[in-house]
Picture 1 (cartoon, one colour):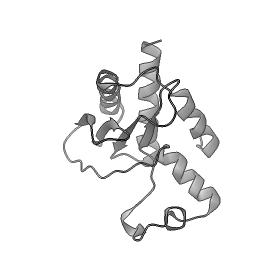
Picture 2 (spheres, helix red, strand yellow):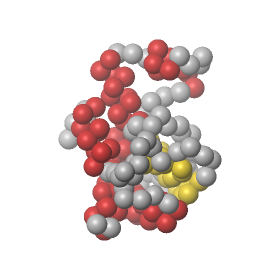
Picture 3 (cartoon, one colour):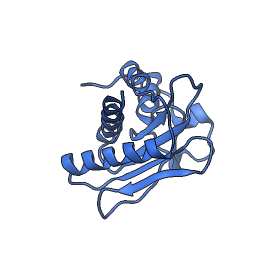
Picture 4 (cartoon, rainbow, N blue to C red):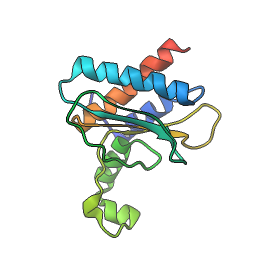
Length: 150
């Protein structure tokens, strides 16, 4: 499936959780880790945290050889990348950052949203695969969690 800004926005809305706490983060993190280990040979970093604090809720690698280097913007990084590509704007133009050489917008960061709560409450980051795969293992993991917890 070819990703578009619209399709990724739809994924973000479909992945809204009923609640979000350390237990939910732990379960989603384990689902993502298990799925990565089944489907890929490259190791990844999995990072889940509250959005507006430094509270780390889950951190794991799927194997040796990973380095964490991630940031987030309140929407999935895949959506941000696709949006920038369609608007042909650079990260520098959008965020007026002084050194865009240290920032990159790649799939692998995903906002955690909760039904009835405005804004982003957390972030899930997967880094180490191709950006489309980083993005899809997060979406698949959240969808698997939601299917188990209806």
